[in-house]
Amino acid sequence: MTIGVTLTKFLLEEQRRFPSSSGNFTSLFSDLVVAAKIISREVNRAGLIDILGATGSRNIQGEEVQKLDDYANTAIIHAMEHGGHLSAMASEEMDTVIKVDAKYPRGNYLLLFDPLDGSSNIDVNVSVGTIFSILRCCKGPNGCDVEEKDFFQPGVKQTCAGYIIYGSSTMLVYTTGNGVHGFTLDPSVGEFLLSHENIRMPERGRIYSINDANSKHWLPGTAEYIKKIKENGRDTTARYVGSLVADFHRNLLKGGIFLYPADKKSAKGKLRLLYEASPLAFIAEQAGGKASTGAGRIMEIEPVELHQRTSLIIGSKLDVEEAEACWKAHGAQREGFV
Image 1 (cartoon, rainbow, N blue to C red):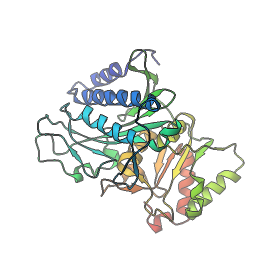
Image 2 (image 1 turned 180 degrees about the horizontal axis):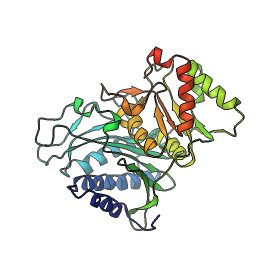
Image 3 (image 1 turned 45 degrees about the horizontal axis):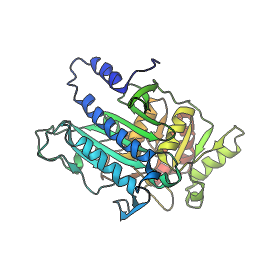
């Protein structure tokens, strides 16, 4: 690792590896970094200003919108809409796609994002994060207006995916299909510096993360896997923050498995495919891990809805494969949990 390499320099060096590159992706990413810095600033001083708590409204998911959710959503839209690199955006917080205003130039990319994952934990100072996915716009900037169906691309078609975690430090982790790299924000210079180059997830982890309070709703495959973990004699430990980005980030660096599977209450699963599961699956696979519904690969799901939900089992490769085996042994494929 080279100390002091900024994210901008790293992106430019990556761009130079592809002589035909126009530089549009690098510029797009730079706009996203500006939004991340703005959100990080507000998260870090949230307790000092009137930005904690709920707005009183609910989003498309039926969840209560937190003030910081709303702030982060607006910050990303305003940072990205004028750059000329996007055709449209989609946010977990909004019902429909966000089309780039005709007064701005349009680009060849689509952006999907969860502006502030885990925001209900912000009042108690638990880490939260922004998750994003970048897709190619098949129509091109001069084509017809972008429609919802243009976002319905499987994870294997992602150009880039990443997240920004706002915790004891602010860290950006991303992949473009050439490994996973992490950058930590140095507030003294206002730059993201390379801190974790070519992250590799251990093949087997000691940590498992699942909401045990849902055990009464678990399907047999999930119950069997958790029972197996507890009885296998390995030195395992349960860690569940309840903020997807925080749980995933820990397991990415230390190894482990995160499960939010389909159950009797949520037959299709609870997490959003396009905003959460698919981008994190891209990162996991690029780091040597795996992401599954329990019956199949997350990255191969063909989306049919903008806010489609899915079962998610993600983490160290051997752990996920063991969980998949339990699911399949109890008929996950036959029952259609894909």
